[in-house]
Structure formats: C-alpha cells, structure tokens
Image (cartoon, rainbow, N blue to C red; front, side, top):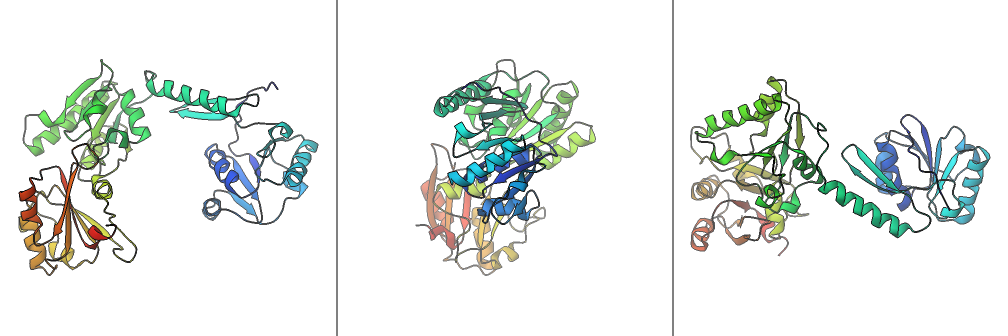
Length: 395
C-alpha cells in the first residue's frame, strides 16, 4: 500500500488517545512534545501516563470509549488490543473524517506512525509498506549518518557548557555529543575523555584549559575571556568539562561571565563522578533501609583552613552517605576531623580511582584506616571517597 507522507502541526489541537496501557505510554510523549492537547480515554492508566495527567499535561476520562469522544479531535490514536473495541473507535473516526492510527491493525488504520529519529532541529520519519523492521533499520542508518555528518553552519550560537561525564566517552549525553560535533571552538579540562577530543573536526580550534599558564583564579579569568571572545566573533564554543559543569566545575562562574557579556549560554548537564564512580564500583550512594541522604563535598581544602566553607562537624553528625571529591591529598585530615567530631572510626569507607575508565580501581576500608589503605595501594587522583554504610550495602 502506498502512503502519502505528511507532517502534522498539532500544537494547540486536540488529539484523542484511546487506551491507557504500554502502547499509549510510548505514543503520548511525542504528541505532548508536538504541543498537542492530548485527551486519554481509558478505565485505567499506567503510572507513567498517570504522572502526565497529574502534572496537567494530558486530560483523562476514566471510562470506556464513546463515539462522541472523537468530536473535535484532529487525530485519533487507538492503543488497545481488543479488535472489536478498536474497530468501534476507527469507525467513529471514519464517520467524522478524522484520521485514525491503530496499534492493533495497521491495515484497518487511516494513518500510520512512522519510524522517527531526531537530530537537533531535523526530524526524519521513515514510512513503510508493511515492513516495519526494515523501516526501523533505515531510520537507524539515517540517525547514524546524521550523527556523523558535519553540523549545519550557524545552527548553534554562543557558548554551551557541556558535562562530559566521569571518564568513559560513552557516558556523555546524546545532546552533549551532538553539540560537541557542532563546535567551532572547544575549551576542555584535563579530565575530559580523550576519545571525545579525537572525534573533533580537523578545523575545530582546541584550547587545553589545563595548560593555561596562570594561577587558578587567573586561569579561570582567562578561560572566561576566551569563551566570551570567541563567541562574540560568531563562533560556537563548547566548554567541555569532566563530570557535570555545575558540580565543582566552575560552570556557574563561566555562565555569569557569558551573561554579563551578552553571550547566550546553553547548559548540558553531565553524569557526575560523585554518583557514577561509586555506582560502577558496586556502591549505591543511597539504599533502602541504609541511607536516605547523600552529601557531596569538595576536599581540595582541608578542614580548619580559613578558606574552607565546609561544616565538617555537621557532616560528622549525618547518618547518610558522604561523598568527597578532590579529597585524596587531604584524606588524612578529613578522616581525622570526622572522627574527632563524632563519626565512628569503624564507619565503612571506600575509594574509587578513575571510575568508568579502563584504569578504574577501588578499595574498601574503614574511616579510621582508609588513609593508610590508600597509601598502601598506591591509589592516586582523580578518586572519589565514599563514607557510610552503603559501602557494604550491595556487597
């Protein structure tokens, strides 16, 4: 059967979805993303659909379908597996000249949902004549080609603060990778996965932020200057950071500098090592019946230092998990302070080095002995320290 491909502008237009199960759960998000006014008719809903309704994003009639439900709809999606009930819906839609998609019987439908891939502002839909698997295979080939193709000139402006994740190049977000492929200038930290940098186009200007020859504060000012200067030249700049830009990454400072210069900023969160590294070592930072809280703290300044903003006494009183980043150099002083403030020296502790990479190493110990254990094992930065009963929760 030959079909006529067409894109529908559904923003502000009513779309009826009959059924509240798995199929409807998969179809509704795309309709909502298109701006459709979604009305669901079904005696029951999946928890995901109920969440959409509770949030006010979709309407719900908790009953069986009635032909009058089609009145005023621009499109109908039948997402039920009862052929007789589905036929009743499509008959009502046919009578009112409303296109109807049927999940149970494509041949009885007057409209089909294509296999879709999205890449930035580009949406590609692949229709089929009954060979759904082939259409999906073509869709996947197109998606791969779009991801590998040079970006459209001028598609992005300003500065994007992109989190590269904990170290494994596959743990950067899809959006982060897409923006990196579109960059004219990339300013990267030393903890950024090297494999990502190897994928940059030859003409991309690469600035290694770790080699800027100034002290910490002056180096940050120079990074801010580069971001603003290149963006004002009309280039699209990606500031690539290990982990998440706003978790001890000074992303806030860079966003402020850009905003003050009138440069638009896009923030792309990343997978932070404070959660990823423990998880990959088999340690959940929260666990039912063990820890209902976790706190992430920077250990680059030792307890007692006049520049420290950390309330170590309060942290020692917590019952949950304490995650310390950049704390290996000061680990001895940190553990001593926590014990002095009342945390038991027998509290389980673990250290994960270079989590998510091929160099990942980890050890488990106690708060009182972990410093010596780290020294003995030769653990080196970057490493994440985890303190709390969760260290043994999943063992």
